[in-house]
Image 1 (cartoon, helix red, strand yellow):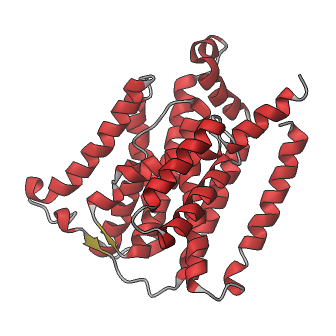
Image 2 (image 1 turned 90 degrees about the vertical axis):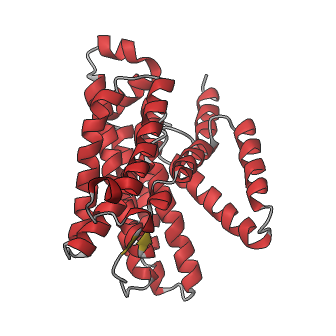
Length: 316
């Protein structure tokens, strides 16, 4: 897509985002408002994965670790140190980004399957650390496998809607920045030919590390918000690899390395899952798997990726 088309898409995105911000005043159904909030939540989560893996081509199987870290930082800050939610929220993102920075220094030097395996192993290691921390270090911190109960918020769904919406809005604006900045061109160059990018003067390690830490910051925010929303967390839930799988599938369906990819993919998969899950309780996962396989076979570059390719082909 050319720059003019991208500007039009941005304007439409801003208009729709503004309209969506007023939905709680018009939506009377708590169920519908919660569903909309979940869709926005997953758009942001998929966007975080796309921010790093979609543009660089480095397939990260461990982003859930920063989601889980964010959840536990907020839970510990609120229950052990009585820190209010919003300072805990910022702290969750900050600590997630700092940990990602130091983890990224060695792991981002790996490539291909080695990077994917390393990130997956780190996520599983963090889950086990959380499960065994109390009995290993004799400190009542994580509350072991029993989980942590956060203070009941007392807020309705509209509160969490307004917590999630601005975070997702900033995530998507970050995508637009990546699409149209020197930093973003550097990430795309890494995906196309990393060695050639290095020879051309692109600091590939610094660019990957910046994208990785930024993605982790937002994932930490989402982890903190969800923890406060559901009020009870366990390591098996917040470090569940299934969250990573959903991020990957949503981005693949929408189109990796595109601005609209996470929006389309997350909306499509969340609504399909909700619709089929309420009608076919026992078989809906099989049906969703079939839909995903068929979609990827027909549109191997994702919905938006395929549209972009076809648009370019018209002018060849």
